[in-house]
Image 1 (cartoon, one colour):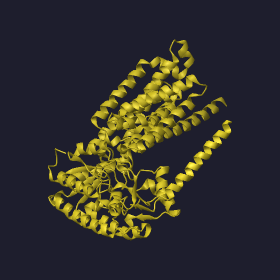
Image 2 (cartoon, chains in turn orange, cyan):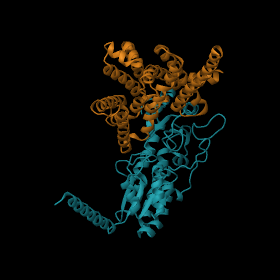
Image 3 (cartoon, chains in turn red, blue):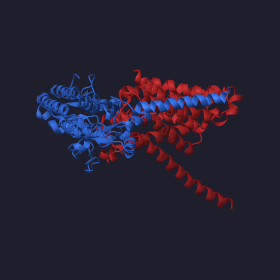
Image 4 (cartoon, chains in turn orange, green):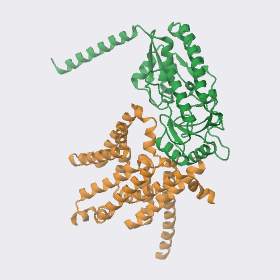
Length: 284
Length: 313
């Protein structure tokens, strides 16, 4: 038992670092992801994940930290999406889609014709959770604290925004302002996580644990708690699976997270059917 | 004049222009040779001198496995009198274009057809599972340029092809190059002779040093990214096995290459205390010479493996 579940971590420092960074990412994703699920922002989360590529590429090219480039890209995307939806009759998903493919193509074009990026594209998209350094963990810790702080400070407007946007306006909160703050929070989550699970796979961590949490709980805090637990379990099991079955680490983690969602979904459905049947009997 | 007519005129002018430029290309003085990557391109260039144009497809420094040709590059391939490629799936991103060109009549010379191809052995590297499952057993190694003797075979095989396809007699130049390759081979062996037998162990970014190791008696302990290409994703067991292999074999240096993840190399280095040294395995040096390239490679390895196990890079 020890050899299977514990030894891979005690023997290898990089596994511990991965789990530590992964836990922090999971917490950040649990908070941001719950709002993504409740507000139906999955598409923009996905779009930011792809759209940060040109920023990261340019940052690496000019010798900056990738996170700075990713942040600029994300802000540019959110700004562009807001501008298009406000100044035209087009829906937000059209605006998101436009910036999504535009930025992704720009990123691929930059990466494909520069010698500084051999192999980097896959690393940006799929992350390098096995190559986490102490600084990476500190950055992730900082980001997780910022995300938690935003969620606490904006708890009430976010709650209203998630369940009853009209009520939020009545209560005196600017829907547009808090919507943008929420997008900003999602952007930080995606941007920082490109080092750990990658900008593509972070999307899975953003919605799978939070989705499972939303199935189980009705209150936001409980959803987030479940999401964080599922995320951390996914990290641990995913890393173990990668270790024992010789599989790519980032993808293993996301596969576990998505599997957990489906397990919760199936159990829920079976239980509902049973309770549903019982109700029928009582009423009958 | 109506705008419609004007547009037609412009189009006709453009068309004429295209036709005339095509003719220029067809009646061009020199037929060209396209070589897929710069290292082989440098050798071919020395072989033909200025008797024909040598065009290198993959720009020096870009990832050979991943690079994909643009429309213009494909045009050059199709127009060339001869295309020289490495083969064994080195130019993975070009494979489709090369196949298409071959079907439409392009003459393609595959360097790896003319060498003793090395197969990745099962005991190599840190990609073995405990259950004895070897996932790269028998894969052909395309990195033939790390051994000057292999390059010699390629040069010899090119002589008749250049004669037939381009009417170029390269035998005198070839003899001279072969002589220099023999000398280079002795030089490298001499440079490496300072490394004691127990330190002749290398860990590299990906499996690129097979021919070199085979020629000069090195043991390939492991690779950071398993597989012959640089794009595969790393698993936790690969990394853990590599770490153990480095410690068990008292490896003195981790060599990173173009495309090796600095983060992963750094993590392994932190954990094992083994230094990381950059090794150029794919890029021509500033003087564009294959000979300098291999000499530098041997120097880097000799320097790294004769120093202490920790400390300066």
